Length: 73
Image (tube, helix red, strand yellow):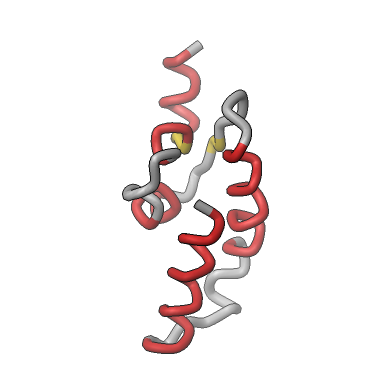
């Protein structure tokens, strides 16, 4: 999934007007995606775009909002 996210960012940067200043948290999202390689981890995020951008991944079910996380406890 981290590779998928990297490709997404690369495409946005090359094909559109992607601004690093407007998306400064993307690098932190990218690092967190590496944790999803381990089944016992989930990513809890307030970024609705992260879930949208990675929805095709087999690990997308382990990216959730804070409300989703609380309801799963």
